[in-house]
Length: 179
Image (cartoon, rainbow, N blue to C red; front, side, top):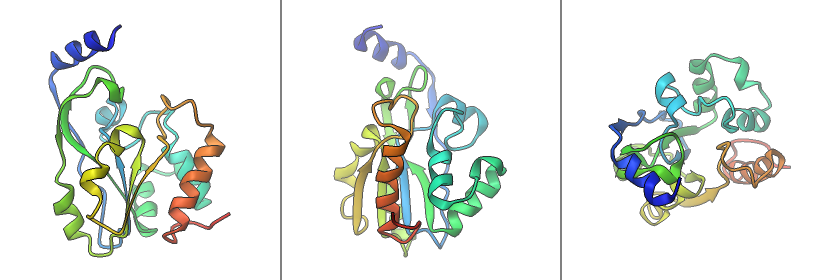
């Protein structure tokens, strides 16, 4: 399917609403995805697609098997370390789960969230589509940067290479041990 046809199909799709932020007063680093996958929306859980590497990657960095935990326990473990999750888009139209199919996206109110998170040091964009918002997130906290996507669609980065990039970013903020 051509990109033009894919966008036309997405524009005919119903409007999708994202998930609420997972943050609390301890949040120092906010990971920003683009918009939840179909699997995540269906489950009401961030990074629910079984091939997404977000939870395996954090398991490696935190040295605890988050995948074996309930979703609520995963979130509490993550929050206890100072890590929060949200997306740059509040809603959009999209056929399937690929970022390139997102149309008519409405942004989340990142400035309002950043203002509430008094300990926020960094916003880390999980992949390229999220990183398109770097111009908006710069200035909301001390550090904004793009990290390699944990999506199964990002096959050009090996899991080990993603772990190194994510470890470096999280270690700078004391959320995991440096190598």
